[in-house]
Image (cartoon, rainbow, N blue to C red; front, side, top):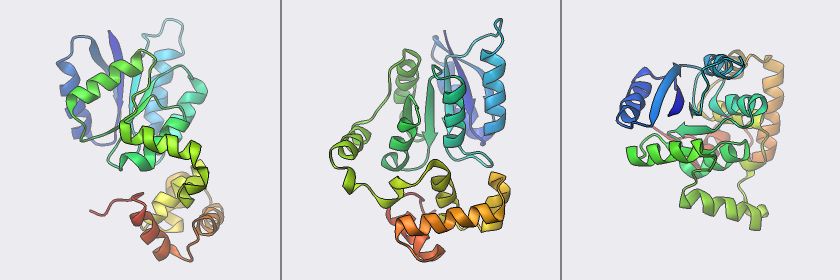
Length: 219
């Protein structure tokens, strides 16, 4: 039996995933979490005690309030390096899949993926393999063979990338500071670095850059 933890801030998404997995006799949703902090706590509860019930795969949403999925992924892989984590997102594959895989994810799925693909990806992750789509494999290969052709934002650190996405979504420095539990001065420093690395001069240009690169998707 493959024991799964679902992590998504939208109850309806968790409910939909649970229904998909309920039809599979070898898959069992053992817990849910609505944010990153709760996800880390749940994983510790399942894996840290010697007599803990155990956990086989985490399905983790990238875009959550507070700590985003990439930040949570980084912590989970630091504490539990052998735990498979499958990332979920509404963002285009190529923009976030590579970053997720570099942080140790076992795969990256768009939330609109076919249920059969989700189930197959879960089984693959639980077996210790990685789920990589053809388009993501192509981007990975290009980043190795043609590193100079990578978009400018690929050079951002994990924290810079997090601030970059929030700025591109129209968040103010104060709002970002509150969400990420940082000081406004620290966020302003990150903002300056991001503008420099992306070659943009202000938040408007940065937002336009993010849309062109499909880092954010217009509703």
